[in-house]
Image (cartoon, rainbow, N blue to C red; front, side):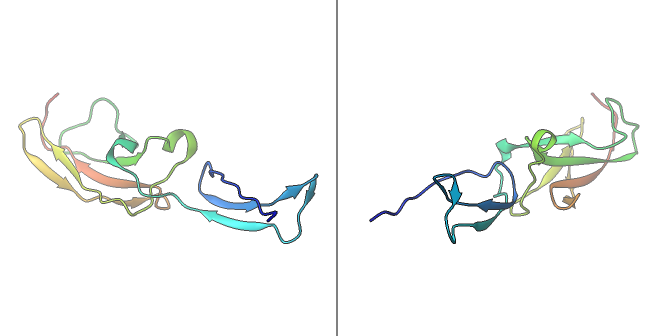
Length: 122
């Protein structure tokens, strides 16, 4: 019947323009705008990162931020969708567990949780 189909993968979220080009010319009424968003991530797609001011050593009693983000966040800017069911827990050296309050940070691209370091340990 003369119809064609195509499949493509957007490498990142954003506004994309798709056009059909036939013999080097854009086909009439073939231009479409597509808005691509990130889908939800699974646990194995994420990594926990230290926030500013947190090196290998942190003073006991100090509060610092930690971030839960996509593995590709640093290289591609891959953000999180906000549809992930996120819970974060701090397990201390003595074995105590504290639930952290995680919320969206930086335009909703990753989750941030303030952490108070309760006790010393390795």
